[in-house]
Image (tube, rainbow, N blue to C red):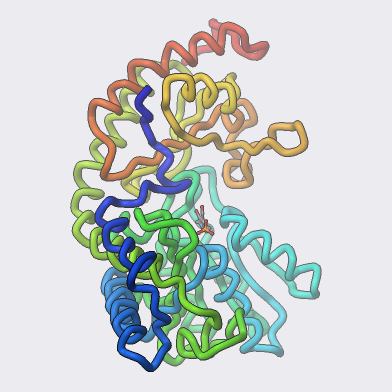
Length: 389
Ligand code: PLP
């Protein structure tokens, strides 16, 4: 059975070009990039090249890139750097729809005495910017707001937000783990102080990521150790993965047009095909300001997990907007923050495409999914056929 992979916001396949670029560094080229000898120096040069490629993708300077182990580490590093560098400030701001990499750290910090504000979103997942502005005080150490949401793909107006935060002299971090590689990102234009990105979302391997730290921003390392990453992240570099991430960023530059064109067209085709084929299906989130590859669709009166299991039998890989915690199916905090009704939040499915998807795959989903929903509704205690569409 062929796999139809439409779960690219969870992780992506490693591009063959990336694997090819990495392989020598698992074999003959095993030197330490910090070594004085030529053998290590050759590896060091490749790491420098990779740093330049990552910087180029987001309009940064190479020395503004710190390699980390994952997007979560980048987010944690940024937030910790800001609070450690501003020890007198005890207020931190994020949104209600952040990824757990930010949300759960904020909840942890609130137990340690920090005052946290989570800015609300409206029913389309759009940020209440006035509420954000009102929340800022002289005590605010950092504002951390994601650029694009991993579940709905909804994008926040980062330039506008940054401007309002930075004119107050407050450090601004954005989690751009889902944004980089899908739309053009220019850190200088966006005016952010720090930005997180992650390799496995852009066809590099898992276990490699980066944090952009604007030159001049006060920084305290999270991992304290050797001089690597200019003293900003101790530990011998994950050389092969860094080189792979460099290659993935180079490919991402080439793929940006395809994301905005072919990938978006496929996403729109999937969306309209499924909406046409299924009554009581609705899109979650602002359709205008959205990543080109993502759609979150709620199929009312069915459970997302059941849909996923039925799709899995056909080789279709997607995600649901609920998490199975201790036996109870809790709708995601993102959909809850948007006020998506219970009957819809439970039946939400996220499809996230990549440049590797084809029209044939999308048409297969459009053909196979509506009968699955119909079958599940037949056995749903909540579904009544007379419910108007
Ligand atoms: N932030 C967002 C928006 C994400 O979607 C993810 C992963 O899904 C992360 C952070 C965490 O990245 P990583 O899996 O590399 O730790």
